Image 1: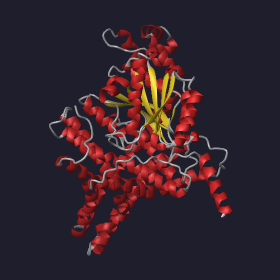
Image 2: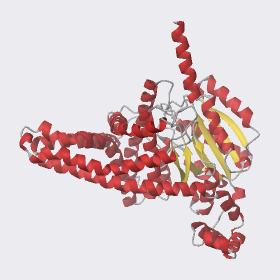
Image 3: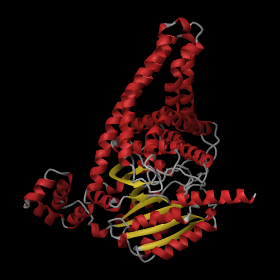
Image 4: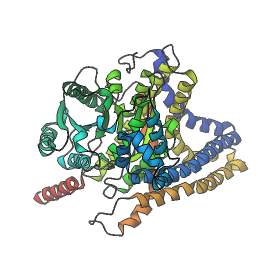
Amino acid sequence: MDIEIPQGKRTKFYRFFEILPAALSYGSLVLMVILSIFSPFLASVYLLTIVVVLLIKAINMAYRIVTGHSNLQNAMKTDWDYRLEQLENPSKSYAALKNNPKLISKYRFSEHSENLRLMAAAENGYFPRPSEINNAVIIAAYNESYDVVKPTVESLVNTTYDNKKLIIFLAYEERGGDSIEQTAKRLKKEYKDIFKAFEILKHPKDLPNEVIGKGGNVTYAGKKLKEYCDINQLDYKNILVTTLDSDNKPHKSYFSCTTYEYIVHEERKHLSYQPVSLFFNNIWDVPAPMRVLATGNSFWNIISSMRPHLLRNFASHSQSLDALVEMDFWSTRTIVEDGHQFWRSYFYFGGNYSVLSIGVPIYQDAVLSDTLPKTLKAQFIQLRRWSYGASDVPYVADHVLTKKRNVPFFDGLSKFLRLLEGHISQAFQAPMVSFGGWAPLIVHSAASRSLVAHQLPMVISYIQQVAMIGLFITIFLSLKMLPPRPARYKKSKNIFMVLQWVLMPVTSICYSSLASFYAQTRLATGKYLDKFDVTAKTSIQDVDLAKRQRRKNKSLN
């Protein structure tokens, strides 16, 4: 079936749903003004309904943050390599488990024990053995420096997974220039003998039917990986493919955990395996607004891992090569190929597809450029790109609400409505909660005599104070999860890691909300974002070097 995003002129149906997110987001704010003009009471009811719903969500999110953090810690402590050893001969391992009192007390009634039992009893079901599986890693790079990419490759060396079962493809862009090509060649020279394979691939610029983005790069690399497997007679269904950005560092047990989950699920081809993305690599080095946003995004990913029915592909994830080959890999027509991959897979497999949270994290960089203004701008550009996931709204509508539908109607409809609601909420909620309480007083001429209008800001303030409980939990867990403080920073830096949270209302409106409105407006007006603006990924060494160079230039002038 056709699972590609349309190019060129859209149908009227498709255009309607491209306009819909912006219309509803702006309309939610306009409705508050209209109600304030004609009825402060109805405006108050409208706003209080929104705020109470948000309060319920905040309480629910606080609970999920705590439980999600606990699950994350448990997954990182689990000995996934030992579990893989047991999967090599499940019958023997299960028999040993039943006859060993210590193992019974540890694994009895556990999911792992049940997996061993099912594999040992399987006659018709196919369960691959760990020794049959290889993990392929596609590292997508643009123009990042050697100091940014090398730690990513080094993190692959330091995983507990057998390096000789890792196939590394460093995929860099031709438009990235000579510097990234030299970096790729240098890294291949350093690491070529460590892994099963270490290949470098230059993605040609200006290929037909491709927007300027990561999707074209990783798809080009995926097709080369297919050729590599054909030459070396490797079965596609025994290759698990992970895509990484150039700053990603998988947890040491990531590949062992992913391989385990891949083996024990019979529907492995119809799953993708989603780690928890944590933006903590350089969290001590970035400016305070970026720390707030990075921590908030990290905790949202933890929350998402606790909601399987809402979980979607984000950033780095893993999928089997046989599924990718059938689907022709990732979309080359969107700048949000990660989230879009969920919908692409969902419709290709007729609804028989889902995302499985594997619990362990992949660590990523928060936004950092060589100057504060550049960093602030780069952060907005990153969130603008993420918000352009609203472009999936018409795509999903076109595959659910038309004759193209090949998925269960109510399942597809519920997913569509959740997708639409998520983008609308992200846009209008922050400004509505921050300023909506004052609308009746400002707009309505008789509002000064309205008790409801006078009390509304105060009521909203009280509700927000209750919601602060969730913020305190976030602050506490963020401090607990911080990587060790670098020696170059004094202990007083810890104080600023707490005080930074006063910026949360500002970052919510100036970044999250405005980025959503910007992306939805571009989509609604047909001025599509068809270029992947690469997020600045600069190491602290690069920043210090740039500062020294600026001081030197200033002294010379």
